[in-house]
Every structure is written in structure tokens, then in C-alpha cells.
Length: 190
Ligand SMILES: [Zn+2]
Image (cartoon, rainbow, N blue to C red; front, side, top):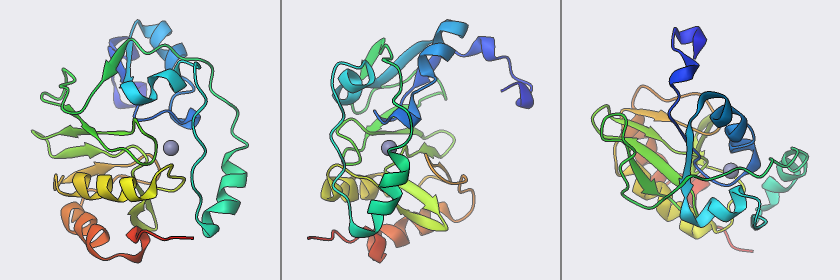
């Protein structure tokens, strides 16, 4: 933030996209330092607070080596959730930023949509690793595919991913192409 000429003291809210430790490990420290509140979907809140353990993902064969690597990430400290979110909630910035429930990666995964600016934060439902694709390590893959399509239908001009660089050109077409036929989105069985 300082690199952008902004004051970290102005952080008022930290919105957690889902209850995976690599997405909220520093949230409480940042919130305490700057007096911010922490928001997350109600279905992942107990995990983030450290009251429940997140379910393991149902892995595809090619995800297994990645998962062995990813699970070495240290657990996040229990983190308070000041406000539990639900689908359609307005977040009070943007203006008009709102929650889009996008379950499947985890039950409480959300996207954050800023319709006025055409910006979408996907969390881990969508990733951009070489190409736009369904995120990895999904607890319910079929549900994640449906959520991917829901996010793609928003036709954002700018997409910010949990993993990968933001997409700023041809975003609606690339999302649609991935949602419509890309093999990466097929629901695989077995
Ligand atoms: Zn994740």
C-alpha cells in the first residue's frame, strides 16, 4: 500500500475470500495494527476462527503432488471474524462492492464484485496459471464448476485471482471460453 502512495492506517476492512490458511494467516495481525474489522462468509467463519478444521479437498490425480507441496504451509493462527457475510451483502466500499457466494473450493468461498468498476476478485474459485482455469484443491468440484460459471456470467473487465496475475484484457471472453468448453472445467470422476 505504501508503494502505491496509500496509508495502511486507512485499512478499514479485511475481506477473507475463504478459509484456507494461505489466505488469512496475516489478517488478524494487520487488523489489530490498523484497527480494521475482518469479514468472511459464515460457512467458513468457524474454520477461520480456529473452531473447526477445514475439510480436505477431493484431489484429482494431477493435483496430488501439488497438494503435498501446499500442505507444508504452516497453519494460520486462529483469526477473529467480526462480521459474517452472505451472498449479495454489500461491503461498503467500491462503491457497491458486494459478495458473490461461490462455494465448492470451500463451502464459504466468495467472490467480490465491484460492478461500477467491472472488477471481480475470484478468491481461489478461478486461477490464472498459464491460462484461466478452475482453481485447484476443491472440496466439491462440481459445485466449484457451477460457481466458476456464476462468476464468469458477471462479465468483469478486470479479474483478480487468488493465484496468478490480474487479467485486464479480454477478461469476459477468456472466462466464458474456460467456462464453456475448456477441459480444465470438466467434472472428472474417479
Ligand atoms: Zn484456497
